[in-house]
Image (tube, rainbow, N blue to C red; front, top):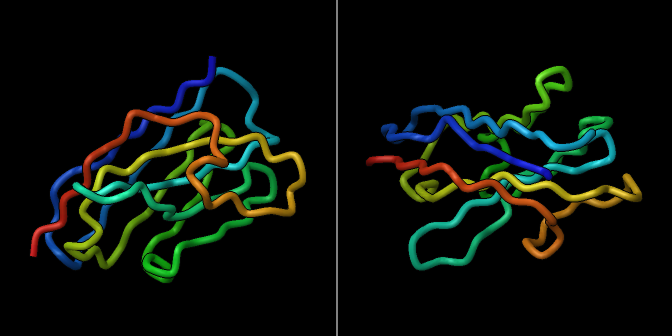
Length: 127
């Protein structure tokens, strides 16, 4: 049973930083891609960033490029989202997700691509 558990959310002022963690368990994730999504009140869940567990290749939404960094720790089976220069529009519930990466050639950016989801962690950025 795959389990993804996010942590690290909270309240921060605009311009500040937070680091989210996603602890993954239940199987070997070497052939998986991990994604971060977010959902603001009244809006659709949107793609933020993705990383291939093997190789560490990353891809970002334009809205966070240059401010957010996704990484993974093999030994801890944990994926991170370092968020810098936060803006009020970054306020949302942030979700971690996982999908089997059969090709290693494709960046998974659509919500329906992902098989497994965490419960989410709230990030609030005050102005």
